[in-house]
Image 1: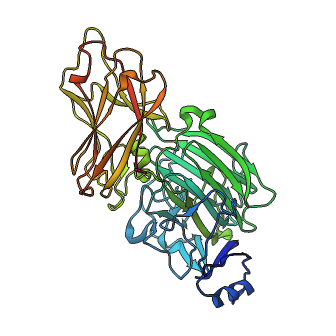
Image 2 (image 1 turned 180 degrees about the vertical axis):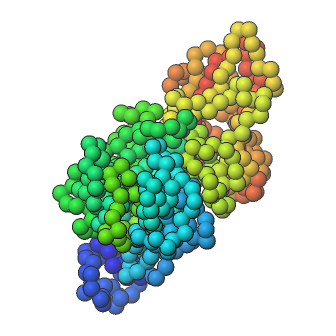
Image 3 (image 1 turned 135 degrees about the vertical axis):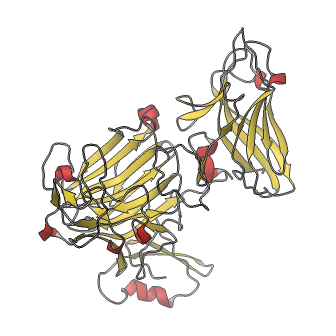
Length: 503
């Protein structure tokens, strides 16, 4: 494959070593000198590194399931859901009065082009979209026709933490360019831009602004949902040329980059429970009308939001539960991505379905076990055992928190299972039982009575399996009556379950 973008290209030539070549895109037909040289070399492997880390000192690995160079002549529908294709819309049909239309998603000359058009003959849906004060009908603005169609694509896969980078140019019209992501109860707008805003209002997006915003969609999910953000005033107009925008999303931090340079950052330490970016997210690339800063005129259209590439890198981990780390950290659902996302599933949706499932508690357990916000080893939530006082006792034989079937998939082998535990002062259970469901494997974290109190500590146990997980495998966490005092049982918290191969 010949990469046409600007990046550091590492050519691995045989087994003799590395040659670094800077490859600069030239917008003309034919190959650049470096591209011609590339096609004549054999035994080569090309590696694309983040523009913010050209030598890849951080050890990033490209997530090819989500990243896209937008080569060829059509959008890759194995990676992307196209809003409106075959009449299907995911979550919404766009921000009225504009409506997403699939014919506006175009791939040509190595670029994704999301077009906005004036289409009076388009069959707009006869419904309104209630977005705060916006109750416009699609295709109609303030009672008059505004037949504007636009476009959106959504990644079919989600990912947890990574560096997201896009090379793009906003449309030269009163239309947004948006590169954003959503997951369970959260939204990260890597950027919102507008090339030609019509209304100048304090706090609104200007033509030389890059707006990054994080939204909290946990209940009650009423506006305003913005948790934190940053507006950068740029030395250029966003619709004039291509620039590279990046956001590094870590487990407890966010860093914003522009053209490879660090711009601004946030940490969970400073934000506390406003840190909402704890679950896997999907990428959105779209264009909309923000009517509060103006609507496009017919003469401005068509206009195009152009993207040369969108890439996501992640760092490798030896945690076999890494993909589902948020679930095993009690932050949100586990995803079964082999099943389609329900088209009506919004970020605040906490209903279990074939795509997302949650920890399970039976009626007897739910009195004593709960996922709690605000006390955590990481993220913002953990599993709490409430304990009981002098006039109470555990009125069931055991309390259990259980994953859905199919939540665990590990090969045969020898492993270490660990978790973070916080033990309150008082009469504590000495043992937490853990069962791997299929094939059944009974494990224990024991000796808790001798462990430090009022701090997060790591507990660990080793196990071996001669068979791989079956399709029904999962994990159950149990606290048993036989291990507890008759009265006055102290509470405890569990977080961050990890499985690693034994050394």
